[in-house]
Every structure is written in C-alpha cells, then in structure tokens.
Length: 174
Image (cartoon, rainbow, N blue to C red; front, side, top):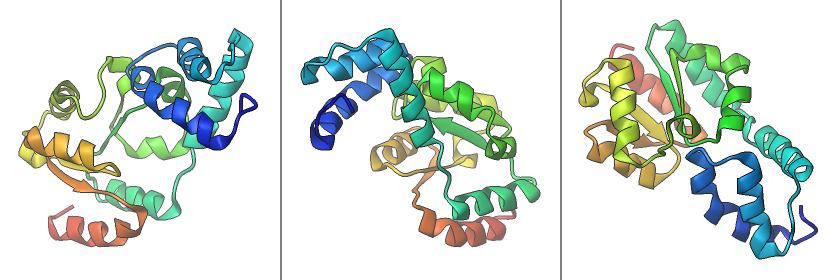
C-alpha cells in the first residue's frame, strides 16, 4: 500500500488509528497515515483504502461464531463493543453474525474508544445492567484492564479459549 514496505505502512497505520476509531473521517485518517510516508492521499485513494481496511477486519473465526451461536441460542443477552471507525460500523451492521447481538456499539459512533471509561458506562447503561453482571471479552489487555477498572468482569480473549468460555458460561447458567 502507498508503494511502501509493510513495516513502514504499519508504523504509520497504528499510531493514527485511535483518532479514526473515535470518529475521524476516512479521508482524514488515510491522509494522517500517508503523511509520514510522503504520500498525498486523494479522496478516491482514501475510499479504496477504506474498502480494503474494512474487508480486512470482517474476517470471523469459526470457533468464535460457534460460541456466539451457542450463547445466543441459550438466550444470553450480548452486545458487541468495538473500537472501529464509522465506515466499518456501517458494513459490520449488515453482516450475518451481528444478528447474535442485541446491541452493536462502535467507538466511531460515540467519539470515545476502549479503554476510555465513558464507553464502559455507555455499554452498562445500554444493557441496563450492573457492571459486575457484565462479562466482557477482548483481545487486548489494555481494554480488559479498562473494563475491570469500571467494575466489569473482563477476560482476555483468544479464539482458542472459546470452548473453555462456553463451558464456563454454561456453568454460570447461560
């Protein structure tokens, strides 16, 4: 991408991501990524990059889908809380797997992102639950720590722990 190495691209991609996940426009994000690389990003280039980025984030792990289906079938109320830009949110909302969630919460729509305390407060309010009654799974320790600080029962997630968590949720009555 941009005619630069993957390593150089990633060094520009990640530092600019937080603002994007908090609601920055697609064009502004890709221009922020392109700037340290010496690439002038046009609106059409930003559109192409956004489409590729969204497609890359849509991959779902089969064991994760299986856990979602199992919990949904058991009547467990679930919400998706994702640090993701608005453009991803609109596409994700149309994906088949999102039917398992009662609520879809995207940081780009709220203007705040995990681990910001405001996003946890929003989630708990949306679920109409006490923080300690919410179980939160995330693949980033910083987000798990943020949820724990908000009083939420949070655990580090990796697809291989899905079967273990499924058994644990069943023991909890889910």
